[in-house]
Amino acid sequence: ITSDNYLEKESEIISDIQKCDFLSFDLEMTGIATGSRHFLDSPSERYLKHKISAEKFRIIQLGLVPWFRKTDSSDKSKISYEAKPYNIYVFPGKEVEHMNIFCEVSALIFNSKHGMNFNTWIYKGVNYLNSKQYTNLVMRSKDRNFNSATYFDKNRNIYKTEDIQTYNIFEEKFNEFFNDKTKTNTDNVFKYKKLPNFMVFHLLSKLSEEERNQIYIEIEKNEENNQGEDKLVIKKVTKEEKQKLIAEDNQKKLKEMEKAKGVKNIWDEIIKNKKILIGHNLSIDILFCFSHFGDSLPDDYDAFKKIVNTSFGGLYDTKYLYNNFASKEDTKYDSSLESIYEKLSSQFKGSVNISIPKEFTNYIEKMKNKGDMDYHQADFDAFITGLAFCYIFNNYIDNNKEKDKLLEYYNYKVFFMKTFYKCFDLKNVEEFIEPKTIPYCLRSLTKTCDFDLEKIINDKKLFSLIKEKIYIENTNAMLILIDLNGNFMELEAKLMENNQKYFYV
Image (cartoon, rainbow, N blue to C red; front, side, top):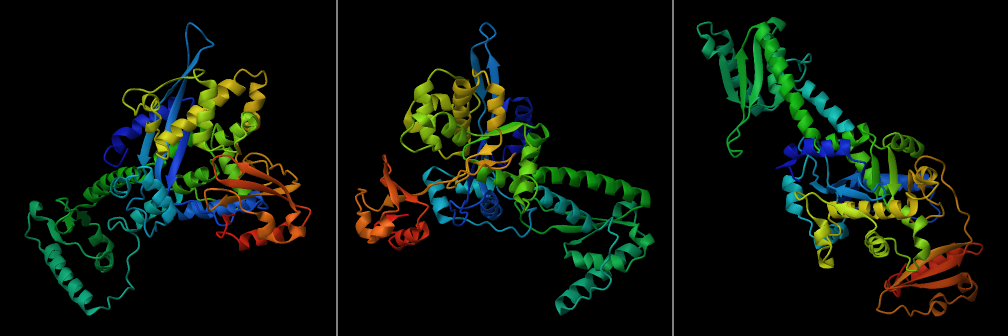
């Protein structure tokens, strides 16, 4: 979905949001760098690092999939789901002033390798505003309204010689028009080239209130291939005619501002209907959504938690769910979206019936050929996330006698990477797990993982802090567990000395 077809699709998406049982979502962004993440970060510290990213980088695509749970009328035990994958290109509109777009080169390369169309993003991305930007747009619209302004720039002098000359010619032409009593009603229109706002306000400041009530000002846009100039149009009117024109103009501007909200309308609908949201490793994604479409992110982590847990009907993270339900059988230390889908689908194949309406991309058919897996297109990742949730829900939760307790327990718990906390708990106080060791991942620079750590560290006392070495299958990397009772920071510094010489730390 792009700006070409968004308006015709918006009501359909909103209708699906209102009727669906839950929504899965995914974002593609211009970057997610959060500074140095450390195991000793508190949830508040990590939140502030994520907040910087969510406010700095931009969303490229929003993948949104409404899911509809259906029961077989003849067999109540048979559950099926209908999914509608939407992929919306998202780009800030012209209404957002002074916005910069920051990009991580690595993020752009990654997205381009997975088929991202950056031309579509820039030229046809759908507008969005967050709440603060929308409020500012409304205020700016009022401030720049020539017809209902209560403030006129009486004290602003025009200093530049060329501006003075331009203004004097304009004022002379206007006075000829305004003071000419011979014109008929059809001639009561004065068109002039568009001038800077301050010149128009300067002219208005010289008129009495009675005189200002006799004119109505608008800008006539030149729509022909953006060629030519816009025009300043001044009409002679009665007071009653002016009030009617102002009312019509306000209605028109309201529609334009609603259009400028773009994707914010969808986000507002999700919150208004208190929908259940499903994501994968969604701690950063949820901050991006609030930063771009909702309210500005607060500096206080507890304040953010309150906003989140009062906005939705539920929030579930498939990465966290998988690690708690299914990962006991997984020895490969990999809970990426691709990996957990492969594991869950091979284990529970046939346990979930999925259908996709014909007007949507039929990922069911495409996925029969693994070469057609569209990972890192936002709608596909959102679809796979929702499918993973269906597998976990149907096979680990739905038939459990403590189903309601499980759903309540895992609600608002979000995966917290590289930490001694069990998770981000966006509803309750985070549970701290007192560690005995701290893990470091060493990724080899060569095709083998045979570096000699004892020789590299060259300090028996420091080397003795390494309590365990675990080779991570198919990743050319090794996990080392370091004793926290010793000087692990000194050992970390020693490892960092050799960073990019033998391995990445």
